Length: 112
Image 1 (tube, rainbow, N blue to C red):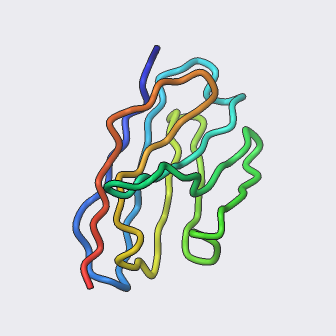
Image 2: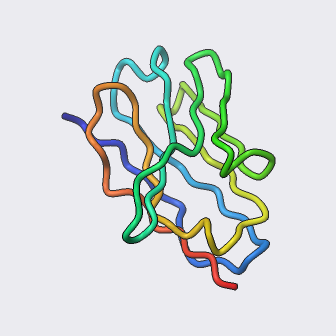
């Protein structure tokens, strides 16, 4: 199975912003729903946001009002713009689409 490739994570102070990117090498990119998940160290993986092939976005409570998911079908890329970051946002962030494996993720660390 092809794995998505996430990037854009890093260390940021509370209140800061990051933009995550994920490239999915599938010829189905334009027709599949894409999603971002996160998993804090020692915690469970949880859904953050998802976006339909047509661009309709839905957010879990953790990201509402602060995170924006978007996609560029020409680049097979999905983005997660994160604003007003909090220490509790610290986690490994993954993207996924139906049928894909989990990638390596990208680490986001928010310092207080």
